[in-house]
Image (cartoon, rainbow, N blue to C red; front, side, top):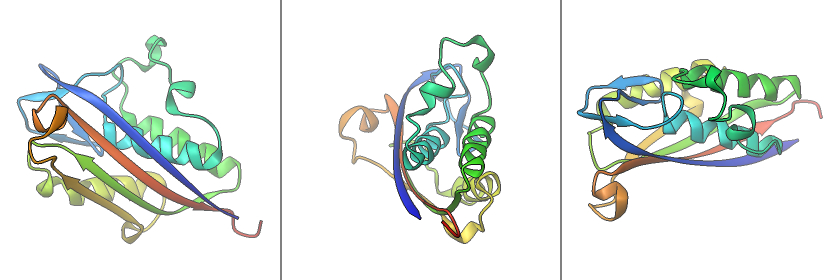
Length: 160
């Protein structure tokens, strides 16, 4: 059985926070505001997997009202979500993502993001795609107010 999920996340850029995308800390004057490390890419991927499984979104599993998730590394959240798929006998087949950010330039960091995603999702790196784009200075992203990410995942259950 094959299932498809889509995820989306957005966080505001603020001073005095690290910028973490795809599990990579990127040198930049601003970081993303959130209860966790606010890694929009990993949050979008988590939501895509949960969506494919029909299990809601990450807020259901990791509410921002729970102090145990304050500042948590989103790689740990994604590991938990991948585990939910595995307990239901699903595996990730393919993952395609897009980060929307006017700045900073993300191309130098994409390779490490792919490596991180492939490792936690337990797939070959060739099954993971990370793209980065701008909005040509339009909207909240173009004004440098925030960063968003989209993710689409294909999961399958061999033998179902």
